[in-house]
Length: 330
Ligand code: XIL
Image (cartoon, rainbow, N blue to C red; front, side, top):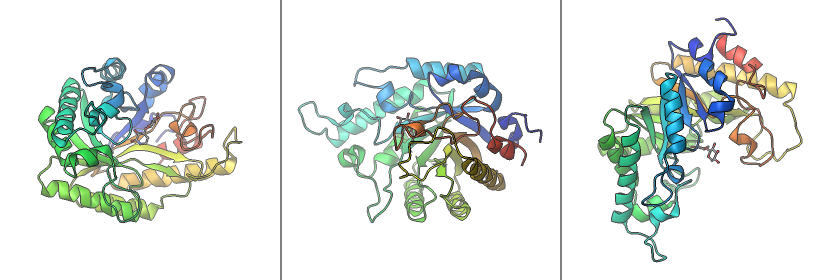
């Protein structure tokens, strides 16, 4: 494989290569996106609060612009995300009198949202993250305490899948989560998806977000997670990949460039990950990065604001990093 060829081209026989984009990056990273990625995800523009800020108000401009960019340039589009505990407005759960809305009201609002949004992008969005991050990270509790769980009950997840399937029977419907390779959480996700299947809910895939770093998770944990999820007979995608230079709780904010050691480890990690992904190309249908180049990454703001990070395959000048060359030359 020639090192300067495109990323998507290098994996064209294996899986789609995607990037999260936003209203600014479809302009500032346009050439890079056009050359290297064949799938896109809206970073925030298709989330509930962006599309549906009040019950009678839908705001589609930014999402439509991304959908048009994908369509005009022949890119696949993943939809992210319909039902999540974050970036969802309070009105969805309020009764209008300072209390909490009842189950039927919240379910009706969920259905209206899903019908409208999935219906609008039918034929453009080929795959939806229907429910995002519904299980807890640790402890005995299984489902994450959230307003969805509190007002609707445990079946809010199955209901979301049913509504999405009714709105677009051709869309591939995914459950998406992070810390997905952690053995304890992996089993909760496995159990959730299995129970959805047993209830007959239309679920076709599991998204492994892939917010990883130079140390975690181990290759063995990633392999174990892929095998466990694949045993459910669903498709898998890596949906939000980045390889942070820092451990999650590292508070360091002084670095203005990655060290050589960080870059070397990151190259090695990316090479190992993509070698592993290739082993599973029959079940893995896409690998999406949460951004396209290090000039813009959400990790500059999360979890430590102002801690510059360099988690992607292209640098702050949108030039290929060593990690890029490692990955395309496998
Ligand atoms: C993040 C965006 O990148 C940020 O811009 C926003 O402020 C918060 O959400 N898991 C997900 C994504 O499923 O939607 C999140 O995106 C990152 C973690």
